[in-house]
Length: 141
Image 1 (tube, one colour):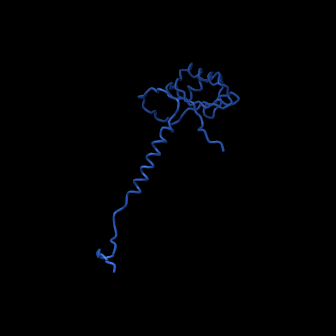
Image 2 (tube, helix red, strand yellow):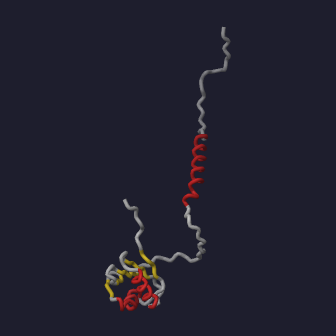
Image 3 (cartoon, one colour):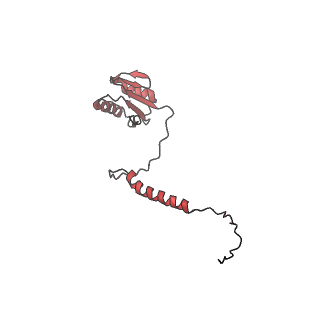
């Protein structure tokens, strides 16, 4: 004859608490993955960059675009100009404001020497704020 112990009612009570153990396990695994992957995402070239206290410049209402085309012709906005009248044309486009930033767009096939000549002409005309415009690189498919 088997003796049966009486443990009370056989009904199971529902537990209304959330089991957070699997959540903590997943968080620890993700933490380890990010701790291992974070050093791999840094740049490999060590450079001691200087700090800058300059404030971000506001975007101009009407930027001045100077374009050097593949045939070495110059345009300001949509207006073609002669190479020897660059200083006068830039003065007219900026209203004589030497502190205005000039956005320089250059065709890919233009030689480096030609770009430097235009930049030297801008410097000679006392336009020292020159920004180079480029396209963002896209992945080749």
